[in-house]
Image (cartoon, rainbow, N blue to C red):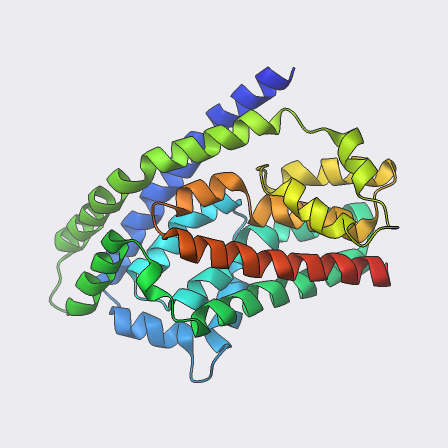
Amino acid sequence: MPAGESLHFFIYEVPKVLMLLVGVVYVMGVVHTFVSPERTRALLSGRREGVGNVMASALGVVTPFCSCSAVPLFIGFLQAGVPLGVTFSFLVSAPMVNEVALALLFGMFGWQVALLYLVMGLLVAIAAGVVIGRLRMEGQLEEWVQQLQRSAAGEQFAAESQSWPLRFGEGLRHVREIFGRVWLYIVLGVGLGAGIHGYVPENFMASLMGRGEWWSVPVAVLLGVPMYSNAAGILPVIEALLGKGAALGTAMAFMMSVIALSAPEMIILRKVLKPRLIAVFAGVVAVGIMLVGYVFNLLM
């Protein structure tokens, strides 16, 4: 039953994401006592523009998180002083181009589809991060995040002088500071995703995803935004849509928008980002996903 599926999804996802948030923030707080924000920033920003975006996107490939689960790591990167554009490259690639998605695509559609998806997905993540980085929108972070960054930038930790109890205490301090601000948004976001999860109108969507019309790809992206799932959850839906006549590229665009631009993710990000930055993020990634859909339809 759809209601049962939604309830099961909510009960499973909320504790998982909240525990991930606590774990990531705690670990980042401890790591922060070893590595200064300046060092982390230098590592991921690189000597040339785009190197940090490539590294962050590649990191996303090996982290099998859904979009809501990737947000805690996104916050952790900002907390460590990683440049904004680089963190967005990770936020896009982690849910969209992880090894779970690639393995399932390989098993269901073959290596050509999996390889093209990997290349195009990484290009979208890298390009989105570079564009957002060039726009210099750090002022569009919520004030508490900016304050967190300023505090981190002003703190200096000497690794040789810090005892382990002090390091663990620093991790707990970060958990108290961040978890209290975002947990409710996570519950609301996952709750919305759970409500939609059990009601996927496959027949209606398949009728809009044929190869014949140019507008089918943008429509597929718009249809995917209100939904929420990870790659493992949405790929069976994609297979069903293809069986009902949807074009491969249009179905891929739908899948990417579900796992990289979900409304629940936007609700959670609203606690971290101001509306203007959320709109820029969604617009840049949506354009990239539409290009991927057209390329798939052209080549496959």
